[in-house]
Image (cartoon, rainbow over all chains, first blue to last red; front, side, top):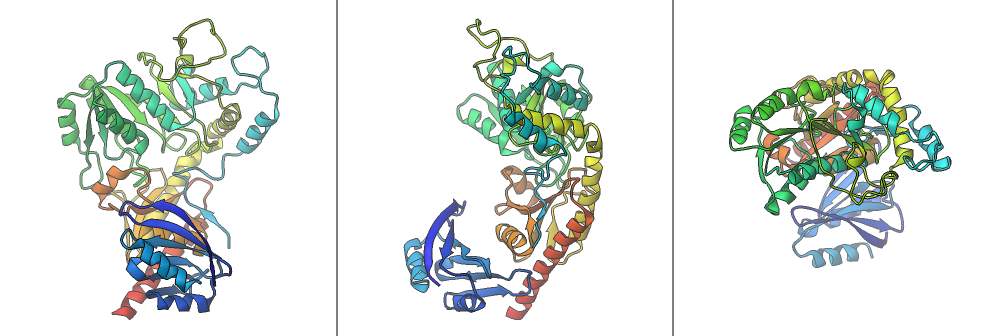
Length: 92
Length: 388
């Protein structure tokens, strides 16, 4: 699963920023499980469309829906560049 | 997965019967340049004013200024008042940013002194604090008829009676109420009423207006073309032209006229439908473990159909994302452009999840939304237990 592009959606009052990451394939159950390498993974397989959230490096959050080609990413204010690079490595 | 729309406090959907057709007809028709002597019968403004006057129980259709929405209407009212010498303004913590931001801007410029009155523990405007603010000198009082966060309806009649007793002008923001609850300026003592066409009236976006009492002499904030009296160097003095500059949104107003015709017939039940569904939502959500409903002391819906709540373990923005993308429930989360009220109801800084129904929603829509919230609360609780 490769990251194609990242679009900044909005900035939050606490200094974090919300992005939407777009990928070359859909979020499969396997790819969601692999997110566990980044941090704590919460997965809700029983929702009509399964939802996932991972709290990863530096407090960054990825959240999205199984079967979609994109997900929402909340990037912290601190150490943002390092976090971005870590995510890019994961999705390279 | 089908979608259920519960974001009617932001904008109603679906629109009233006949709105889409009226807009389409107006766009397709040859423009008549309303007020500019074409003689064609395609200017919807007179009908809008007449129907709005009837809805508000005022005998002066010419005192209804048509605008692009409540934000422009509120700015026209507030900035116009400041031009006439208003220097001290009292507003409530329930106000929307369309009131707070113009007022804060004027305050920062040093043009006005602003008092924002807080709420009591049960969500009412604090009358003691309100009276104190009036005693400190108030030239203008702005009151939100109903909160777009809690759905609570303010007792505008009492607040305006006190305001007028103190010699203040009165401005009502009826964005959440016109079309769903009675908005009667003469009965509640509102000298100005700002409203929008796309919420309770179920008309198109880009429409709204301002009722201005004939006893007021509100100067224009905008100047420009009026189609007639072009020989005058300044904006014409007569109402409503005085406060309307530029080419009107004729297609939007044609849609608004259709919505108003509907409101005068079937739409009369809109408030009751919202009350019933809103009350069902409040009761059902309140019974879910881990859900906190910000009912502000009102277990029954006031007729606005607006319910704010939080789900333990789900930040509001994430909850709204899950509700929409996983369950097909379209709602809104956050501060809802009304930051002050969240400090008083205990939902700052992240805000709430808001469901807002219209008369077009059904009991099964409400049941589906409640069921989704129940599933989310249970899933989070299970995860918490597993982690423990």
